Image 1 (cartoon, rainbow, N blue to C red):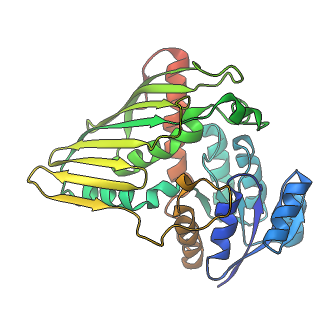
Image 2 (tube, rainbow, N blue to C red; image 1 turned 120 degrees about the vertical axis):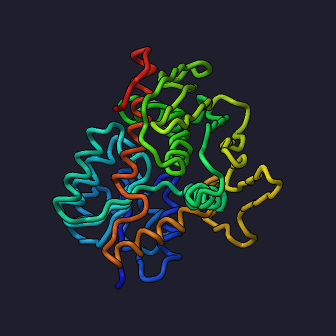
Image 3 (cartoon, one colour; image 1 turned 90 degrees about the horizontal axis):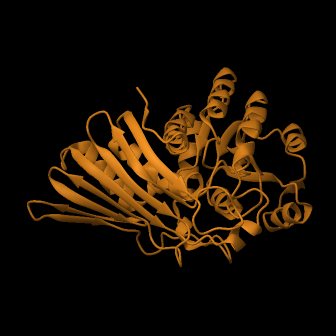
Length: 342
């Protein structure tokens, strides 16, 4: 079974999707769309496909089997719903939406029209994440007592001035939390695999003059079985440092740095995982290496799911759970109180 695919949005993340489609057997790129004509034209010429300025026109004329949505966060719901109503499967960049209500609308329409919705969370496919998930799921590490995340990125005002949507509440949905940190919240939520009891958090805008969304977020996410996450996120550090995750477990301690991991069992055994030589993919000049090679792995998994008729591993329901944590971190910070989730 082969798939004809279209992409909406030819911005920074576009090469990860276009090149991954090119590298996936049985999947071809038919057309791309961007409201900026030069960008659409350049992308189409590079990948030998047709350019469009209107995504609805593209969907109607091309009638693809699937579409990748790589647009500003506020457009994810609108575009996913438009595709689903046309019986087109959707692979959407994170976050699924900027609020749970929009995510619920997306899920309802996809379900009604019997199309699959996948959401990018490529860091789940890193060797480090996979190693830790396997050892937690097997019980070899025992109960997770606590986890912590420290993210220190560099996103100066000049970064936001290049964009007409980043750094805005209405279009991006926030700042360092919903844009950069959501990946790592997702990894831990997936590894811990438990329902959230409560969230208590703070956000602030400390080092940026150009934006009013948060450039700092810190707090606690407490799960029902007792595990909790302590987190500290900033995007005003002097460079993009590698994000660090630690899990303190009954039988050992886990350290995840970027896409690698080390598990130190208390009996003395040490297990490690890291990318192998040759696994990295050339996405083209100017593409940051911290996006890694796992977009390609997740995109291939999405099309395997379509072929077999099953749900993608990171589907809309999964992505909605992570968004709900992010949404309630914002709620806790804005209301100045602990938020209980049941």
